[in-house]
Length: 274
Image 1 (cartoon, rainbow, N blue to C red):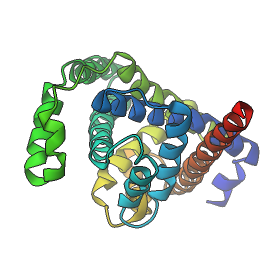
Image 2: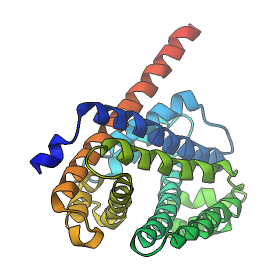
Image 3: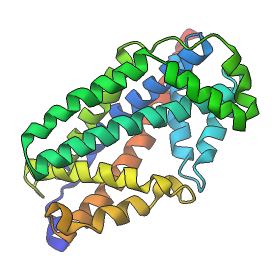
């Protein structure tokens, strides 16, 4: 463990945080694109993006729901609570669908053959198909409205419009910065293929930890799953433990930095307009 920590420099941690910031901005941009479809009115990106990013930090409170509550209150003037709930649920569904397909493809490629990377083609095509044909989304919304009557008004509206192809691009682009984080963060600790494998396994652990709703953002659950399987991916436990700690630190730091920078830019823009 001590040798693994000694291989890490604070400069690469700082660069890893910088590499992760665009990932969270892309998440926010995708979320606001979903709200635009539901509301049929464009969101004010310079106002709503900081609110979304701030809400992602609030979600670290126990229960996870507080991030949605915060976002609902801050956006009450432009979006109804039901619209925000639907946007969060659909984003989670689409993000996890792409994540599951991508992670399975990469794990199979690392384990068996690089030919498994071709599995990414139907995975991405399926996500794009769901974006372009929102009938499943509308059907799911009707089913939810049976249990959540407050969502019923949304089902009475006309069908949701298709998501532009940029939606799929945003979701896929998040992963570019995600793996860039691991490539930078673990420089000197592991070879590049191992760094990518560690990033893939960390993503898999995140999916497996989704059931941990009572713990803030799956705190410790994801890391416990990640560290518990050194034999599965052939990397020693010390490297896994250091990677888990660094990833938590880097991603949390990037979320705080993204929210802070977006808020500062919004305040500066308001000041300039006066």
